[in-house]
Figure 1: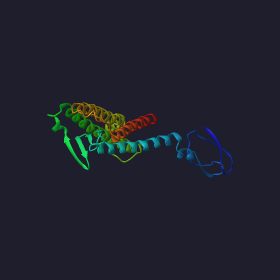
Figure 2: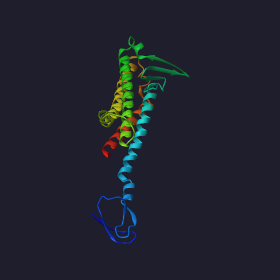
Figure 3: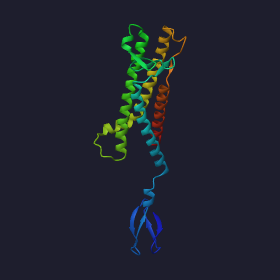
Figure 4: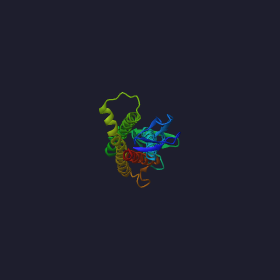
Length: 228
């Protein structure tokens, strides 16, 4: 119990510890509110969780866009961008002209780069599917957490909560492993055609930024999980 003074007649009134709402004084019948302000005011912990979740929402959305753009962008480059590897093939760009050879076309010429390229393509596509799955799980969990009108079963709601972490990590791992494979394949291919004597294949700025962004989104996902 908690003892308070009536704001009207200043008589002492006893209320339950968790009491909140509008009350009437038994002495002067004056009405007053108690406990409403504390309930309305969000705690600093709640504000922090909301801030982390908002940043994480944005980060995962941006990473999804980056991965889709990555289907058509160079992840590995050489000769100042003249030679580049995308998930769909080797792109050669020179003086405003570009031509792409698919990895299927390279099997007879160089089995290593063709195999590495195809694995890279599949892993990037896998990363995109992981990222899209994560965004779906995130949407379901967010609607469920905020009491939104969404008709889902208990199992789907549980999976949405559980697999957010796995899909966020999966997108990063798939993209990172795919890049590592194609980077090694590119160096081996460049060595076979003596390109390494002129320029060693290296990660593009896009690849570095995308992998860092994917790592960052997973860090935010961990921060969300700890704060919940």
